[in-house]
Image 1 (tube, rainbow, N blue to C red):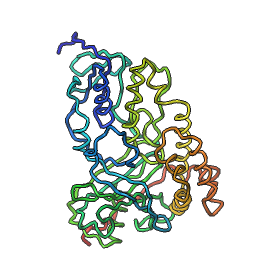
Image 2: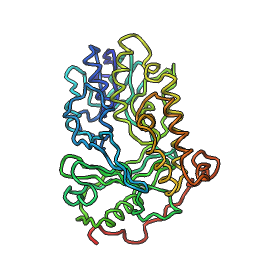
Image 3: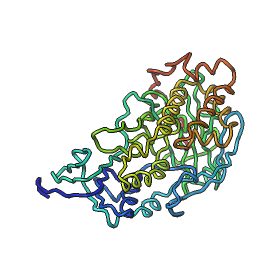
Image 4: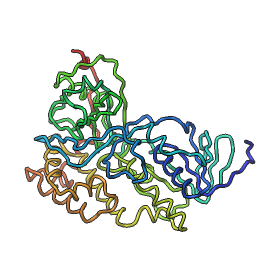
Length: 398
């Protein structure tokens, strides 16, 4: 199209990750004239997406789930089963569940994104009553981060650690080769429904994150501890993104940030897709009723929950491995409502305040509580210098 070409819509969605695609899909079903912009609108998303089953909206079909794990495992000082069904999403199934048949899709990059106008790289201008920016997170820098390195392993090979229908949500067993004076990390491992299991060493809360080389070394150490032998050719995935992206300000004269870009990235867990999917209809309903979607998505209760979770993020980012184990041991003895308030509830501020207080109060030894709340060792891992890999990493077939 020429520079003078202008198209008018009710809603423009910039970015077609799971969040943007769901928003465009649900707005289309609600009768809005929707435009969607993405350079590669039909591609399947690279990351692995997981969540608690009860977080997903009721309108999402069962085909969007690849694997259900009835009671995932948490390892602290002991093994614990969490009696809350967990799932890994099917990327093809989720994509197919969000058709954009009546959405005008532009396979293009947006060069400008404003409150009511999107300019494409070829000069085409899209005008809309509301523009949603769902392009994901800005660059990390030295912000508090989630970092993970995952290795995809054949399910039969992975069986000594993760059997069919099982999953390791948090594995803090001291098997990753990290010393007591090194920043902590844990293992996340779940089957993906395609004959593979992902083993993903994960770090939460460090400024600037943990290097991929260090996370990979720790993953291989864990596998070796369980006698798991790999070929060395297994595919892998990397994650490295900020956890402290705040909710949007009210009344800002800009596009509405939505999804991880709009504060829906959980500061303590790094999850965002389920919460974003669940809030899509809230945004659409607000527009249908002539209300501000930011006000609808972020009432004061939800903003307070976000603020309290960021306190938890800061605490996570300064703990040692032993302190992390003690803290999670205390947390997983809390009530089901308290656990949900931290892990997934969008606005249950009373239960969240109680569970945060109780988790600190029940973390032992007593002196470690000072680190959790930031009275001591506030900047313990700031500017930590991870060693370069000077020796050969343990080979998976050794």
